Length: 334
Image 1 (cartoon, rainbow, N blue to C red):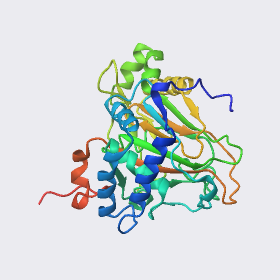
Image 2 (image 1 turned 90 degrees about the vertical axis):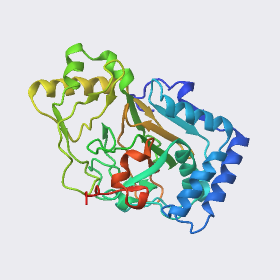
Image 3 (image 1 turned 30 degrees about the horizontal axis):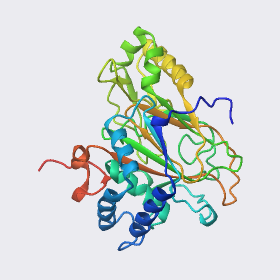
Image 4 (image 1 turned 60 degrees about the vertical axis):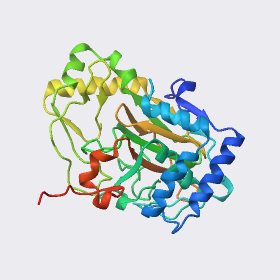
């Protein structure tokens, strides 16, 4: 494993399904997969996912409920042994903007778990608003700071610029890279804050930073409203920063941001996900990124599937046409 890998996360931050639980989840996922139009963006299908999620194995439902109440010191949850048939996973897509709109058993299992935690959402300017998105390397985009690249992806809050950024980000592995070195990197603000100086914490709470839209978002820039990187409780703050697109407003703010980035590197975990592993990152309290790897573009490259979850669905209603799952432009007052 890479030298940067930190000690393993605790048992309270992970669950591995046993054989019976996996069997129960597989049956539910197959039922959802075969429902109606077999399109996971169809409102009837997402409604079925919402209903069927109530039937998840009891131990899994309890774990998910505890996580949505309090995501813990690591601000992440790892769910292992999901139904991914390694021998029958298709070739890894290799085009920019790849998404999963047709239903499959793994994508259905991912949606069931996500819907048990909140509401799956997407953004119309990213990945064409698909609810299940592919995270795959794309030829010619190796240096891209986004999900299509294969260089080290800087630590970031997902869609930090957006007023309704995801509360949770789910990443499920269908296959890892050939060398099995590509890792999801996660760092919790709860581990980082105690290592910061008092002055740095004070500065990070002040609106001395602006964040642009990430490169994967198909718009020119972000909201550019000054904000603090830390917010809310001084004792237990939320965290919002993208080390590729957050800009400090002055030298002192820049120094504070540099100190934070160094601390984030110290507390980050690197998780080597295997087929059937699903990591949920609390996007309010943790940053995530990726170490570098070498794609071969032979159909067997790394392939994750991603979902975004809102815990308070009502907050984004003004941006969701017909009360759907996709966020667009806010309604104008008539």
